[in-house]
Length: 546
Image (cartoon, rainbow, N blue to C red; front, side, top):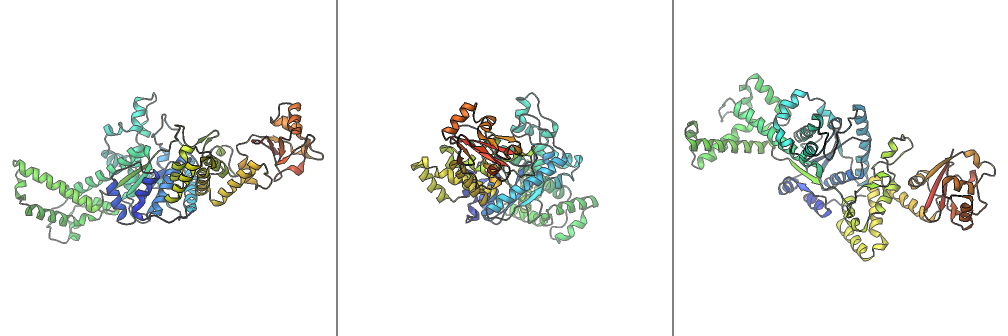
């Protein structure tokens, strides 16, 4: 699954041609930012369930592209925010999960990221859990240090909140209303946190997360501005601009020193250079002909305007020095189908990124999709969607996708594009071996000969077929008449109809055509527990014997 990584400056271009770039807060600035060195980006994932659906594969693949462009992706698990619930895209209040449920879901989801990156030929990404830092916050801390930067007027106009306030009977709880504050704080924390290699300067998310991402960027800027004004304009002791900046800290009172040290621990150390930044700006103003001594006159309106401009310029330069203005956001589009249908749904439900295992409880199996079922999902992609899905859900290079597009346009009945999509998208999630096994299972179902399929592959392949349970003792000795089993499974409505099917050669047992007198015995069992029956070309039924 590995492929040649594009040049690091081509990350955005890679997203553009694949149709993965929906919005960016400052596209040209982000392009330059990425070109200047190795950057770090994160995307958050909601641990509402113990797996993720196929729609979540889009931001995961975007992180893969980020890594292949030479940068460092970070996955943030919402172990803290998952205890609250994101109102985005929800018409009703979420049911709160217990801390134990959320923690278990976080651990289950970790394997998905490991698998996808490994199948893409990449090392496992850094995975953080926002419960690590959110659990340390007190309610007073949030209100004083974070909440003061949020306007309620702004918050109620966010789409995720506005819809619930105006178009829904149930409204929105304060719990979910505050979700955007916590998500914004995540970005602030990660932006100034040097954990595992440096600041994170880009947040990636789905299109429904645009408002939350922008709120995080705004918080970063406001937090930096607040700190710089508080520490520099209000607390600075007017030290001589010519003295050693390392002696300035000693001139603050005790409470200010504590605040500044806390600020330094959060990553802000440039305040020691503040006198030099201010001195250089004073020189620039003087060179431009401004008489800064006039700003002391409160009645001089022109001088007061100069002072206002000077303070704004000083703050801007300081924020730039400290990095408070270098946060970016990017969203990926919501995937839709050309016919307007909902993407990622089958007759049996959502398509999940976790395959079933024997240890799964019955309740958990509703959130599992086998490699075979996923392969079939992609194989059934409509002609109008297949090229777009190749760009979004595979890592195939541009030239290969364009070749498949041309081949598909010339001979769509051959379904070469669908087969490529099914193989590569399934392999990215489950691995090459599982993708090949899914193809073998599909071929066996088509031919009818399922006897050689491994146990798990057989059951995966039969996952969509009806099944029934029977007593294994019936197979002892001469066994049970196939005619009776056909009626019991619903493959025939009566003995007469069952006999007609058998005499007409339309019934097979494990791929072998069955005659009118065929009986099922223990010798027919596959892996000691199942017999696969087929009527006609497509109507399968799996009988389980225990």
